[in-house]
Length: 196
Image 1 (cartoon, rainbow, N blue to C red):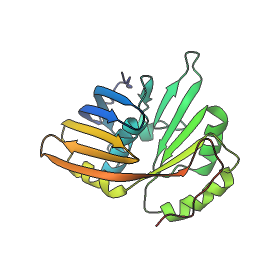
Image 2 (cartoon, rainbow, N blue to C red; image 1 turned 90 degrees about the vertical axis):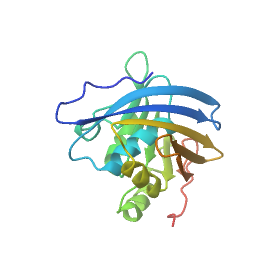
Image 3 (cartoon, one colour; image 1 turned 180 degrees about the vertical axis):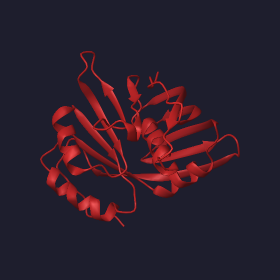
Image 4 (cartoon, rainbow, N blue to C red; image 1 turned 60 degrees about the horizontal axis):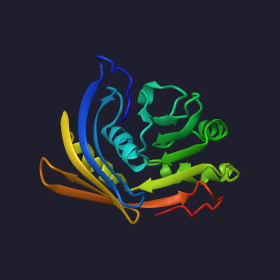
C-alpha cells in the first residue's frame, strides 16, 4: 500500500480509487490513495505523478512531497535499511540531479514531458554510462485530458498491456490511452533518436 507525507493545509488533496491491471508485469491491485497538489504545481505535472505511480507500482512505493521535496524524487521505493531501491522523476529533471540519483539509487526512472522536451532529451547523452537509468515516454495529451477530468474523488481503472496504458474514468465512462516508448533502458546504454 502507498504511504504518503502528511498533506499541507495549503495543498489540494485528491483521492483515487484505481483498479490496476498491469498485464505486462502480471500485476493486479485495487489501489486507494490520496495525493496532495501544491498550488504552484500544474495539473499535467500532478497527473504525471499519479500515472508514474501506476506505471512503476510496487508495494513499497511512496509519493514524496512533489515539487516541495527539494533534492528528493517525485516517488521512491526504499530498501529496509533506508537505501533507495527505485528513484522516480516526472517532467524534465536536471541532468545533474539524474546523475546524482543514478549513483545513489539502485534504479532511476524518468517519465519525461514538457514544452522543452526536445531540448532536454539530447542532454541524456551525458548519462550513457548510467546503466540503471530508464526513460519512459508517455503522450502528454493523456496527462492533459486526465488533468481536465480531475475531481476531488476519482475512480479509474488502469490497464497496461503491450506498452500501452489505458485509463477508464468511471465518472464519465471515457477511456484515454497512450503508447509507452522506452527511450532508455535500465539494462542497456542504448539511446534512441529524439522522438517526434
